[in-house]
Length: 263
Image (cartoon, rainbow, N blue to C red; front, side):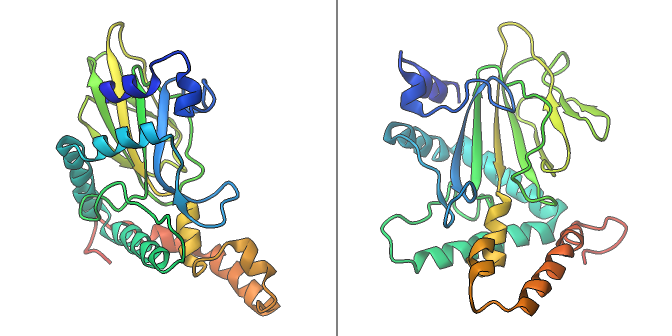
């Protein structure tokens, strides 16, 4: 991670070449890059996020690292163990999206960050640091009941800093390098504590934007396209409103019930 960060951000014109967004982003002042498939912000359909060719080569090397593949695979196993129904929803939605995409008459098709056996998430964020200290925030673009995987990396003393803070639950969690947590980041406000001088902290996160699920749920259309279609009747629009009102409860039912068998 540290070597990749140096390759991407070094040089007098690094911000323009690397396409870095606001130097003080909402989540913190550290360097970060989102990689993978996204939907939102006016996109007509899900597609891979754009990056400079130089950076794409770096990301390809990172995703090809056995160490990162092991992190992704371990995260995938945790997801299956603690929320098998939710994991299957992520897997099936991504698979349906890829099947649809392969049938489209265009030259650029969706590229997975990892093979399906390693990860069911469409998108990843490299928080390159070198001092990744996030501000209190929620990831409002993610699925409300969905999970985001966060893995801490770097060289810091976890007894003195780098703790994960879940503000709504009033929890401060020791979070040493190599730790992974799955949390509903769209509804739980979270951050992490500062680390000591001369220490480094990076993190690797995986998630799927809510827009991906909405696209698949809409039979590969946007809400705007459906509402504007002449073939959509008023009764169908009202039914869609009722269906969407119940989506939260459907999502909560995907969580595992620890007092009994998996439903």
